[in-house]
Structure formats: C-alpha cells, structure tokens
Image (spheres, one colour):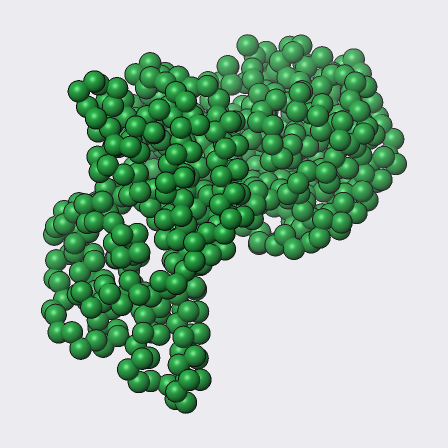
Length: 350
Length: 201
C-alpha cells in the first residue's frame, strides 16, 4: 500500500502555487463577501425556530434574488398565505459560453435600446386600468413539517398579475406538474399527508387594495436616462449589496411586470452594458421555445443570471438563474403583457 | 468543540478556531484563515481538477467557509480539514472535469512516453496510467485517498473532513490502493482489504 501512496504522492507534484492574480482575486471576492454580510443575530438560541409553524414554507437559500424581489413586491401575498415560493431546479437549455467580446455585448444592448426607444409609451395604467402580466416559472416549494421534516417539491407555477398605478390589483397563481425531488422528500411529504406534489402552495387568486402590489417605482420621471447615473439610482431604489451582480438583478427588476417607459427601458439596456461581467450569449431559446437574444451576468466564470429579450420588441421574454456550479436552478418565461380594465373575481387579501 | 463553546474561559481554542470565533463578531478576522490556508487548498484542487478550476473553486471554498463558519468544529486544531472537506464537496460537482483532467494527463503522459521510447508499454508506462486509474476510482475512495496524499490529512482529519467514521476512511484508502495496484500491475503483493464501508461504520 505504501508503494501506491508514494506513486500517487509523486503524481502531479509539480503543480505550482496559485498565481498572484488568482490569490488577489480570491482575496477580493472574500473581502467583498465579508463587507456585504448583513448584521446577524449572533446567538443561535435566540433565532426564530424554523419549525415553529408546522407546514410553514420557507425561502430556499440560494439563487432567489429575482424571486425575493418579486416576493417583496407582492408582500401582501406572503402575509396572507404564509407561504414563500423559492427557487427552482430544472433541465438546462444548453450552455452557451461567454466568449463574445464586450464590444459585441454593448452593440447588441444598444440595438435593443434603440428598439425600445422607438416605441410609444402607453403610459402607466390609468384609473380602473391594470398592467396584466402572465408568466410561467419552474420553482421549488420547500415545506417544513412537524418534526422538522423537509418536503421539497418541484413544480411549475403559473402566475397572472394585475397591477394598477396605486398598487391595487390581483394575483392569481396555480401550480402544475409537481414532482417530488427525491425519494426522501416523497417519504417526508407522505408523512405530512401530502400525496399530491402539485398541491403544495397551491396558490389561488387574491385581490389587493391600494399599496398591496407595486411597480418598481411610481416616479419614473425621477430616473435618469443616462446609463451610469441610472445604475446609481437603481441601487438606491432597489437596495441590496452594492456589486455588479446585484446591478444586473436591478436591471431585471425594472423590466419585469412593470410599466417602464421606453426611454428608461432604453437606458436600462445601455446601463446593462456598463456592468462588468455582463456578456452577450447570442441567440438562445427560452423555456417557452422562443428564440431571443441572451444576455448574462458572469461572476468570474460563473454565469449566475440570464435575461432573454425579443430582438423585435426588446421585451423581456424570459430569465434563468444558475447556481455557481452551472446548474440551472430556476427559470421564468413571460407570456403576455397588456393593459386591461377588469380584475378577476376574488376575495380582498389582507 | 462548537464555536459557541469557545467563549468558555476553561477552553482553549486553536489558532484557527480562535480566528473563526473572532470572525463571528469581527468578520475581518476570517482573512487570517484565508492567509494561512489558501495556497494549500488551491494546490489540492489544482492537482485534482486543474489550475483554471482551482482559481475558481479555491475562491469559492473560502466564501462558503465564511458563510458556514458558525458551524465550524474546532476539534483538530486546524481549519484545513474543514476547508478541504468543503473543497472536496465542490469537486464532486465537478467530477467530470476532474476525470477529464486525469485522463488527459494520462494520455499526454503516454504520448510523451511513446515519443521518448519509440513504443508504448514498458515499466515507465505504469506511471502514465496512474491518471487514468485515479479517474476510474470510486469517488469516495478517491476523495479519501487524495485528501490523505495530496491534502496531507491524517485519517482522523479525513474522517472529520468528510464526516465519516475513521474506519471507513481506512477501508476506502486501502481499497483505493488495492484498485490502483490491480490496475497498474505493481509488483507489491498485498491482499486487497475486504472491509466494506458499511462493515466498518
């Protein structure tokens, strides 16, 4: 046995130490993380017990930026339903590589900006009007049952949202194609009498009074059309860590389920081109099968988020979130967006 | 010893344990851990998955460690087993990268051997096959073996690092060596260890 150990010890023994650049880069990434860590409750004993409420759902730990933003916007839903939908695991479309030079990225985003800028703005929804958006996402619903049993289910979430300028509106969500994520989850779910995976967080329709929902901002005129300045404004409005990855999240936040004016949309595309790590993927297919222009943010070599735009309308078609391992963890496709004048019948929430 | 216990006056923390405990209130203290162990963690990953992946994974290892530092157990006097355990888990996600690298190294080695000696085979050929043999090892066995040989961890440290019983570490390394011996045809005549992981748990 000693002989084998010695042979393995000698194998690839000439591997040099990390380069100064790699060390500096890792050091910088860690320092950034250290700076960004929010103040914590330092005593585990005083932390809110995760199992205090049986069957209460909790957010999953990673990849939830987009969903968190969305949850924040529909916070009343969380209060009423006491559920949170987290993030998703799904099959991948493919793995485009980030080999496109930055100039091509800027050119593609500039093209989108021009398309957006040429469009007429229908204006924010007037009295009695709502911006309606229909989307489908793949999400993972994670439930804690009695005895701290976790029951995780992957399901397709169909979402329709109606938002008026004053934040009144409605939200309808339903699930389908639920699947247990593992045999262990199936067992845990069955112990909690959940025999149908799609029944977890089964949604429903809720109506909201003024302020129950919201657009990213109610004061579009205060936003600059100068891309660099706009990025600074987005950080103030949207909050979160002050880094390039979060800037890319802000771009998505101001484009989805929003009545963003064309001039600001154009500025958002140009602002995206200024974010270090944003790369053009070229033609990609979203999870509804539509071909669009993919733009992704890469944290070093790891693609963490991707937005897919229509070449013809510059509209946001879909988005994907990735784990650092490269695994696709959630996706959403936006299927319809229009101004409507009626709301679905539903009880008033909250 | 959990970090919360380190505040007890009768208990003495290791240097790493003390730094990690301090980092709970003074986050910058965690950079001491980086300064002490980054090179070793990077080198371990680089030997397994290549330099390019090591640049990323070593960086991620310390970021994950920082986020999980509250769960650090100061049982062995050094954070290195803990860090290499995190790195090893990350490598598992990159298993195909590692296998590709090891196979490529073996192929390149063989080509070099053929080029230098005019034909394939011969005594030196076995060294070049080592990469391919490592690539074919059961992943649990390879983890234990390479943490021991390349990570320079003791059996007890590997047990802590992988959160498995020390007997399992022994059997995995023993079986890995037996598999290598079988593949490489070394003259050493030791019998294969017959303990399974389950038997030694």
